Image 1: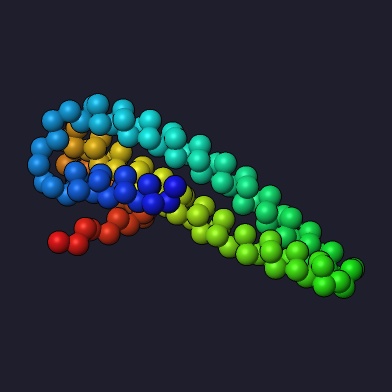
Image 2: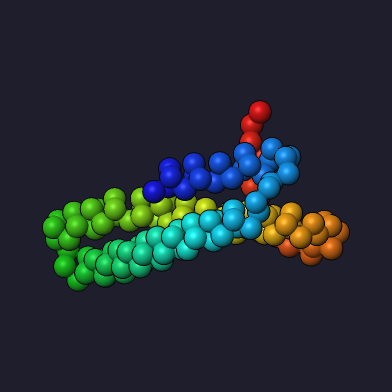
Length: 132
């Protein structure tokens, strides 16, 4: 999933950084909104799974205080091995969706030809320019 999202973001970067006039911005915005909805759903599901694994891991840590057993320690290790990739994947999804939001805002600016000085500055997701 992370690779697919990164490829989608890269294709949008190529489109926006090309400097060419985008002909059918409205259609592209609709497609982007649909894609954002899919990724938001994916992000939400992974949030639930990540939180449940984190809670289960914390319960095993508490159980380790009461039951000093090698089985509980092995179970804790297995959960940590799973939890770390889940957190990383959720991080990729979260940042990817935030990046898609900035693409939508950029398309809106271009569609309405809003001058840069009229757009309030705010700190958000920094999108690295493509390497040439």
